Image: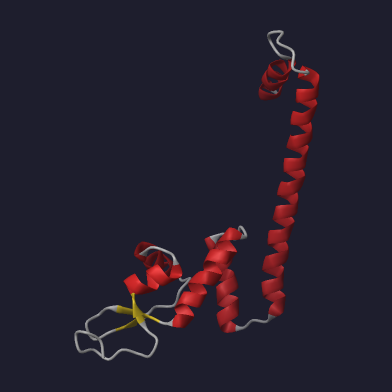
Length: 143
């Protein structure tokens, strides 16, 4: 039983403890719940949210996926797939789309890097004003 006499489930914790243990804020837990990333929590007799260890594991999964660059919308799709078990094909498709976007972004960044390197080679550290880099940047902005 909890401090106010309500029945507590084994390994359940109130929102403050759950947030602390998950390394997020109370607001983040509530937000994840509203967004459908976390299932609705069990409520105690006193209407407190009780979080399970499984909920903490889910928060860790969400945080890791965010670090990998998944959006909340993508995460929702991944988590729904995990919960309803549509099979690996759908989850694989989501992951492949993410990889394709990352590959495209890498190509774009490599191109930007090459352009900047070219500009810097052109400048050659000259103190002549205006630097050729500045001239090229103005040209690119007009195009």
